[in-house]
Length: 401
Image (cartoon, rainbow, N blue to C red; front, side):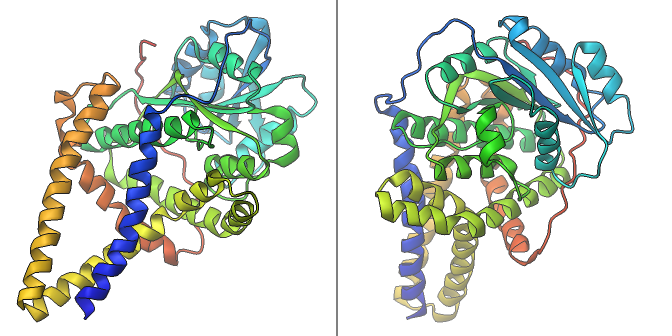
C-alpha cells in the first residue's frame, strides 16, 4: 500500500516536471512578441552594484564604454557598496560615474534601491543592471533600445559564460543558464507570457521602478518579474543582448549562492503566490499560473526526494513481486533519464556554440549539480533568514564580444 501511495504521489509531482518539459517546447512556436528596429532614442542609466570588485570591474566598464550606441544616450554608474579595495578608482578610471553607497546594506536589492533614490530626479528612460564580473556584448544597448521602443518596458538579455570550461561546477552553471535562457525565458516570450529576470543583464523602465519596485527579498531579480506580472507589465527575453558572466568554480561558494536563491524563491512564494493565483482565476491567463509553478520548484524537489526515499525503503522491506516490479520500473526510469540528460546537456552546449568536449565534466555531472539542490532546499525550509554575501571574483579576463 505504501508503495502504491508513493508512486501515485510521485506521479502527481512528475506532472510538474512534464509541464516544464512541454512548455519549453514553446520555443519552437511562432514568435508573438514583435520587436522592431529603431533609431537610438532611449536614454539608459547603466547600474553596477560592486563591493570589493577591483579585480574585475574595469573589464565590465570598458565593455560598456564600447557600446554600439550614442554616448550621449547612456551613462554608466558604479554603486560602490562599502568597498575596502580599489573598486572606486578602477571603475572611475575606466569611465564610470560613481555613486558611493555610504549606508549599511544587507542585499543587492538594497544597493540598487539606493541608486534608484539617488537618480530619481534624472531624465533617464530606463535602467540597465549588470554584475561587476560581467562583460557585455557591444550591441546590448542597441537591442534594448529596440525592445523599449517596441513598447516593452522590462527585458532580460541572454546570460552566457566566460568560464564554462573551468571545472564541473562552472560548466554546470553554464548549462543551467542555457536551459533557462532557451526553454524557459525564450519559450515564454515566444507565446507572449512573461519571462523571468536572471539577476544581471536586464532592463527596466525607470517610472515602473519608482512606482512599483520595492524589493523585500534576497532574490530581487525574481521579485521584479513577479511584480511586473502582477502589474500586467510584459517581461520579455532576447537572445541578442548578451552578457558574459563569470560562474563560480568552488562548491562552497556555489552552495552559499544557491542557498540565497532558494531562500529568496521560498520568500517570494509566500509573498506573491496568493496574488498570482487570484489573478489566474480572475483572468484565466496562464502566465500567472506559470509563475506560481515556477516558484514551487524548490518545494516539489524536496517532496520528490522524500517520497523517493520512502519508496526505496518500502521496496526493500516488502521485497515481493510487486515491489520488485516497481523497483525495476524506477531503476529503468532513472537510467533512461540519466542517458537523456547527458545527451540533452551536450545539445544545449552545442546550441549556444559552447565547447562540448571541454565541458565533458558538466555534461556528465550536471545531474549531480541539480541533486545537490535537494539538501539546499531542505535547509532553506528551516532557515528564518539568509545573509546576503557578495561573491568574490578573482578572474581578470576579457571576453571577446
